[in-house]
Length: 266
Ligand SMILES: NC(=O)NCCC[C@H](N)C(=O)O
Image 1 (cartoon, protein in one colour):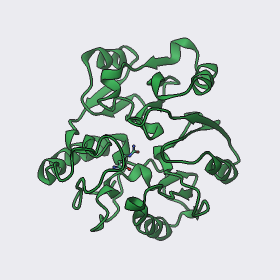
Image 2: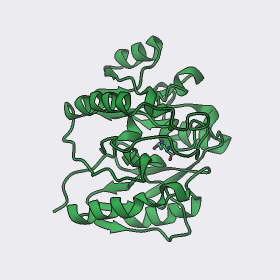
Image 3: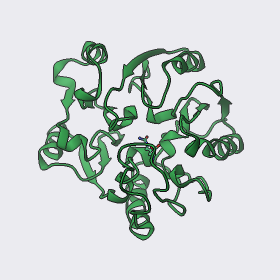
């Protein structure tokens, strides 16, 4: 995670940021982030990356890259506004001993924001459209010798895969279908049986319900509807809701604020 020391909405690179330039409170953001940090430390070991001036979106560490088994494919940000973050994340991964792989400079790829492993590790769900280019998927497939399943994002509000799709550790998936084109929905439905699909309504999707941190049977997410919370509980999940309104102004919530690492590399 990355403390929100320099967090702000300084530019508009997604529809959520529009109308929110310098509209977020750094004090409130710090309090919300601290509550999220405390919740995450209960289910995982958390390591921090040093925030950097001039990189207000660096708090969204899900976009640093994608890691598995000590190998990281670093992000190549689509927007110039975030490209300055790449050197800082690269430095952190180098220092921590990860094997760092790159996609070519001219092929945008936004890390865990757009790429999520199936919980059994058998495939990689990979979004493309607003940020990540589909041609980056080849490099992901090569990095882990894994099947990459493309999912086309068609709603600008759901510009990263992790805003509208989340494989959960009980073998289910939650997703907001209108964010995807039909072939992508068919790919999701071909993999997940009907009883494993948690369809998210628009109101919850707009509260970033799919942007969920999940470890074992705990889910940590922004405030969502009672209906959805009860649905999680009936499936055996412990639900931890953390108000993240200041981060929604930049287009991110719980899962965007963390990057999942599989462990310290040897
Ligand atoms: N969805 C994510 O994985 N991250 C949120 C990134 C928010 C940031 N303002 C962006 O537009 O890139």
